[in-house]
Structures are given as structure tokens and as C-alpha cells.
Length: 471
Image (cartoon, rainbow, N blue to C red; front, side):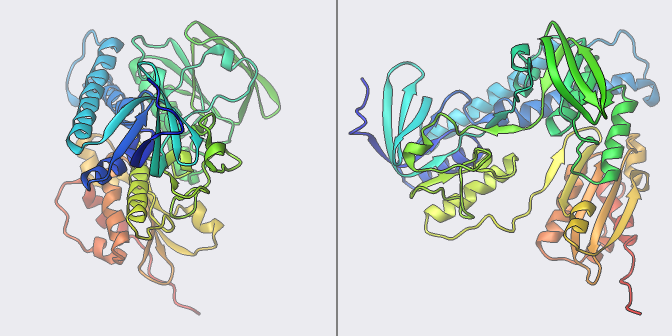
């Protein structure tokens, strides 16, 4: 029987969406004795363990193993009858996801956090009505309410695109057959990671990017390095290409009509993947009834404490316009936790590390050269090829480079970029040095184990030019 909206169930905290930041906030406050409920429409634990970060890295690792088979003679191993079974790749991923979801259910039980499955929407200030997955409705009111609804793949209004039923990353990660020819709209994180994986499984792949470069916001040496790797692996890269019309249906036959530098182009394939940005899941959930305003792009409008425009209502993660990373959503949890408990924790000034799990990986912390120049920040640059890190030679993984920006008049590290094997792991050490305010010389003079990837930081920081003396 439905609970009347005039008599909602009272909780200390109501969280709409069970993604990274919201679930940790719920579990933490429940452990402190608060009465907490989390409302989830479909994915227990959010997108990361179900349909995004962890499943994609699982599939990408399968593709990496496949790439070793193709390179096997390089390691003195003969290969015969190599065959990819996508159903097994998919089942390995599904097994991991099942284990992760079971882990989440266990934590909900142990912390005493209520988990309600259904679609929730605001019906008044700090009040959410839920259409339950198994029928009926319940209504919840919280002293504090957190919007944690995440984002979804953007499918724009290009004629014929929606009618083509394109894949998003969700469907692409659940394929049980290898696409004959995959067309990928977008040369950012998702597009690049999945393009390389599908190519390694045996698909013909064409990446279509409207900008002039892949990962176009990165430095020129990064974008050129990425394009070289993808072309070497047989991926067709079509940059400066704007799609104007789509024909066909993904999974059968697709034709893209567009232009490249004023010239008409036509691209054909069997499957179409959209990977051209994210749209916040904020429409249709009654934000206007809760007094929560949104930005022009549809994100919940928040201040540096992640408070919305409605008293007692907070927003976390993608839907709040935070950088779209699980680790940032987790940090959003810490911000909101502290503020609900009476603190004054701000999002301003925090580090935003990232790693794109292409092969080789691309990882960066702090400023890129492009960002430093745009801000008028002067710097000293050191850059070495990955071959200077001797561990790469033992692995036969010598592609790429690492570089560092150091302040022109001090020994402060401003930014680090690595395009190479294990880049995400190496970056973390530089990040810790930056957090602690260590001078770059501390890493230059450190004793790192030989031969490890981390040891490459010594020749990198040894190459930092001296401070220029004024004339």
C-alpha cells in the first residue's frame, strides 16, 4: 500500500542513486547511527562496478591478453589457431560484476542502510516518491537529501542517429559477438578505450572525431602519440569529421554521412558506438518541485560545498558537474560528509588526477603544457622517451614518453604527464610528492628499486633544466 505523500517515511538521510559518492555517504552516516535510505533504479553500486569503470577495464585486459597472442613470436612463443570467443570475454566480465554487486549488498546489510529499488522523483522539498520496482509506491523525507543520479551517454540530434539504435558503452561491454566493422563517434576516453579493445578482438574499427585531434584537449605530443598508436594497430582515424546524417541500424548496417574540411564523406560499418560526451541524469526527477536549480547544461547547480539551491539538498558526482571520475565522486562524498557533520569542506583547489586506459596508458596530474600557456604560467620542461626507463625494455613496452613541468623560479612540480605502460601507477608517486609540497629534487635523488617503472622518474627529473638567471 502506498504511503501518502502527506505522511512520508522520515529519515536522517535520503540518497537518490547508489553510485560511488552516495553509497559511501550512506554507509558512513548509517554506521554513525543515522537512519539512512538509498533509492536505486537499476544498478546497485552505481555505474562503476556494473557498466563502466571496472567492467571496461576487465574487457580491456582481455583485449591486452589477446594482443600478446598476436605478438607471441616476439616473446619466442609460437601461436596456432588463435580465436577470440566474445561470449567468454563477456562472461568473465559478468562474473566480476556479480561478485561486486554481492559485495555491495553485504555492506548495505552490515551498515544497516536501507536499499529501496525503484524510480524516485521529488514531489516537494526534501521529499522523494519512489515507484517501486516490484509495484506500489513509497515516499521518503530526509533531514538531508543527496542527488546522486549520475550521467548517461549523450545521443545528439543528428538526423537518423537515435533511429539507428546505436550502442553506448553499456551495450558495447556486453557484446557476445565481435562486430565486423565498428564505427565509433567520439575520440575521447570511452571511444578510445573501447576502439582499441574491439580492434584487438578482431573488429575493423573507424573512429570519427569532430575535432582536429584525438583527446583534443591534451598536448600535441599526446594527441599525436595516441593517433600513431591507433593507426599502427589498424584503426582508421577520421578527425575533423562532422556527421550530418545516419542511415541504417546498428548491428546490421550503418552509413554515416558527413563532411571533412568542406568535402563530403561517407563511412559504412556494421555497428555504431556513440561516445561523444555525457548528459546528467537530472531531467524528469522533479528538481523544480524541490527548489533545485540546474545549469544551462542540466547539472544540479551547487556551490563549493556541493550544496544545491535548496536547503538541506546536496548533489554528488556527475550530476553535480564534478569531473566525471569515480575517484572524484568518492571525494565528493568526503566533502558532503564533512559538511553534513558540521564542517566546511570545499571542492576548490583539489587535485584531479586521471588515467585513460588505452595501451599504453595516458595519465596526468596537474598542469599540461597547453593549460600552463593558457594561464600564462612559466615553467621548466623535462621530457624523456619511455625507452629511458629500462623496465620498458624488459617488457617490450617501449612506446610513449613522460614529461614534467617544474616552476620556472622554484622547484615546485606543476604537472606530470605520462603516455606509457603503467602510467597510472607511476603518476601516483608524483601526485603524492605534489600533495606534500616536495621539490622535484626529492624524486630526482630518490633511491627507487631497479628495474621498476618508477625508476624512470630519476632520469626524468634529472633532465629538468636549471633556473634561468636574470640577465
